Length: 70
Image (cartoon, rainbow, N blue to C red; front, top):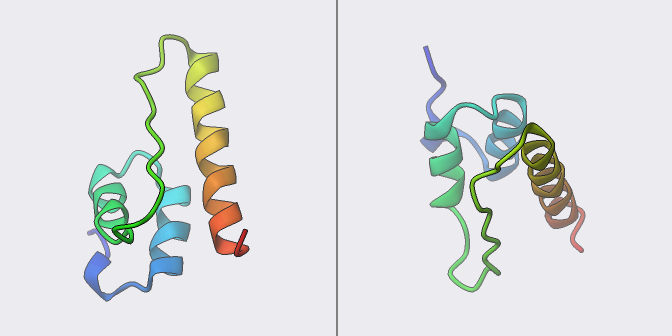
């Protein structure tokens, strides 16, 4: 059973998404909590496993920077 994403704080939801990166419902819930003036970052579908890993690492770094206030 999945947690209720509406009841999670944004930091809790970010942590959940990082721990369950295949959970598209959680990622969608996090996406919909973005601020309207937030900078968009677009990822193209990865062609290789190495590209997928690079995108994931960039995604983690962006989230980490956002949580750190950078």
